[in-house]
Length: 214
Length: 81
Image (cartoon, rainbow over all chains, first blue to last red; front, side, top):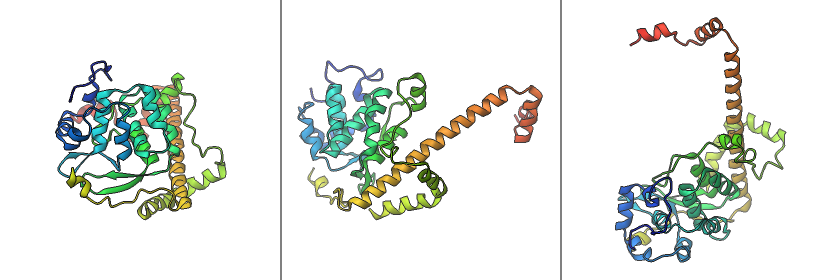
């Protein structure tokens, strides 16, 4: 088994799912101690134990070493757990890093429709996450910001994300019903929004301040 | 592996230390996202309207507007090569 993709795995985006992680990174993961020691013979179920132990998200760090987060992502790509199981990873409330891992995996493998419908609710998750930067240092950010990156960036955790259809296109074709509904929408009145429009510049300053404080 | 785990994890990701501040920070992020989405929607609509408007114009009118907007005419463009 070792580094081969599960034989009954379906192709994702027209290719072997493991190829979604670039070859150079993939090779580094296969060479890493964590992969050899802790990822051997994992299944969709036992991988949860590893994901629960995660303490950060991130791509590569230090001397281009892959993070454990990335190793487990590759393991998921290799195992290709069923969609329902991935959904459970994402919907679990207790372990935020398992959720982050599930979200990242779904972003890599899911259809645009699935991605929007399962990841957008996580905008309401304000929990803190630790991210390992390229330098090896840690940075604090939040689940909703991670989801925002997944939905909007091209590259997250040193991995190129597959193309995601634009939301408004899916809305027009009727695949998604209506624009994203924020959990704040109900309590949000027009006044508050107008205030936001006016105070946008100062608010943006406040954001960076608030982030610095954390 | 020892080397990795020996590195200090220098930020604290414990939740609910200061619930109110954390919620306020999240709310601000969410509001800015809503604002961003509305701005994008607005920009899309504006572009659509503009497109419609230009489609209804005659060639001369388009040429005049292009001039006003400082867009180059076909002739000037070919001279630039």
